[in-house]
Length: 283
Image 1: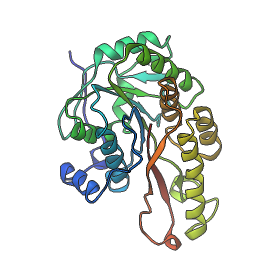
Image 2 (image 1 turned 60 degrees about the vertical axis):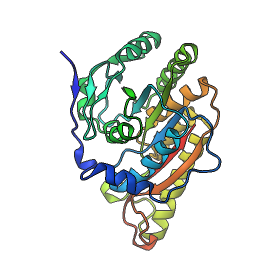
Image 3 (image 1 turned 180 degrees about the horizontal axis):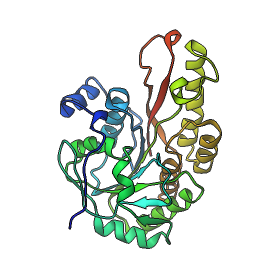
Image 4 (image 1 turned 45 degrees about the horizontal axis):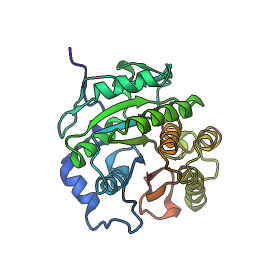
């Protein structure tokens, strides 16, 4: 029986998705510094009305450099899974069409990582951090398969990333890696107003995000885990650390920021009450 992952978070991307994606890219120009070949990305996973532009523009940049056979997607752990969890086979349904899981590569990778993760389709059923990005992956890379992995924010997330990177370096598979994370969640609805609201709170949130972005750019996975534990500025710290470790094993030692935004958008900072930060990074 084929395993099927049905969308459970469609309220994150309601409406005409193709029209939205085209709107996110309207007037956007590829940066002059864009690498010739992008091997990995860090993307946010909030509702498209908030983070969709950042996701679309970052994947668009990557799509101009390569068409991968498979995306390995490291998802955030919002529910407290027992172990890094691999969705091993089947399909994921999206409003833009089904996406096939690369069963053969997923199995080969799982064998290569020395029991650092387990096959567990059930834990993925209520986790949105991977699902929210899939319609865009389907749009930009219609024939690309996926390998979904939920990653705990633990030290062995680095081991997982290094092990996968080692396997990929030896196998020379045409793969791109993605880590799914939002940044600081600030405001009473998220349990923190440590620096008040208005301009001071908004500036502090952006500074808190900037520290994590610097860790992403420097490819410092260990620091990502430490930062997130101390300052709560990445809900997908394990996913990001795993991707960074994978990138370093593949010879990528620095990242580039495509875009930074917040859910507060273009609203005046003095009206800031709560918000979440989003960054699109490429390697």
